[in-house]
Amino acid sequence: MNNSLKEDFQSHVDLLNGSKVALDVDGTLTEGLGHSAENNFGDLVEFIKFLYDSGVEEVFLATGRPPWSVVDWVVNSFDGRGEKSLLERFMNTRHVMFDGAIISDLYGNAIYERSLCSEFRKLVCELLDELDVKYSFDTRDAHYMSLNSEKVYFMAKDYYGIDKVGSEQCFVGYLSCLESEDEALELIEKMMGMTDKIDCHYFFSFQGHHCVSINPRNVNKMKAIDKKMEIEGDFERLIFFGDGSNDIPVFERALVDQRIIAIPSPHTTQRSSRLLGISKWNKPEALCVHDVLKF
Image 1 (cartoon, rainbow, N blue to C red):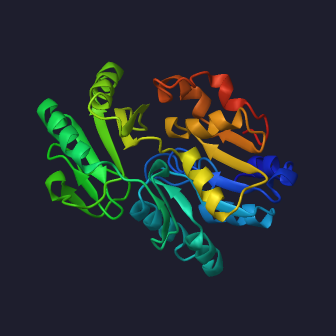
Image 2: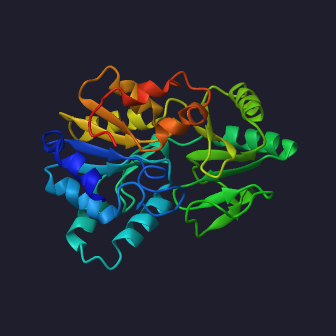
């Protein structure tokens, strides 16, 4: 963590003490998909350690990533650092993954799961194959792609054709490399018209591609955080760091819940109009509703 950022945190240490901290991963803790965190918070292990040393009650991830990707990333970040007890604490923490479709520790012990309807998955695959759109679906343990997709996604080790999914539960789908925002919105309308069991969101990806995520209906990071707190016990204060359209529900809640401090990543306001896409929450000034710990 650079000195100026550390000073900003330390000047608000009273806010950190006793709080729970939720962290988005890509674009917040990392520069982009799978990259290091050095341009934002610096070293991940150092940042987590700093938060706990400042009196934070719990640090957990709230990410769109699947569990297998989160585990690989966390383990690699801690590798060779000699912070065995801190790693164990973080592994045993229940994290929000798949944009809220799973709440689980990093050993695979889930307390909450919501998967996509398998019948819908088959229907949407037929539609997208007909339109020659690249897409993928993720289970807890693997990444399944359409035949026209390339093998580029987080730090995936196992890639399979979509026909190999079988009876496994899928928790999120992605349409990628769409030519325009209009094409993305048209596809969203078609898919939403096929079933009332999903939510679709447009976003402008880190690589400059127009993308759409497919999630189970009424599943998002804020609802998952609510569920986590319902099971584990409520919070006095939640500090959330995020940067993308899948973080919007938390920022919206922060507008009306003074216990929540929602803080954008350094670059979020610069690209919010594209990143937030079709969301109602598209005013850059809304990102800074809580002017604390600002970068």
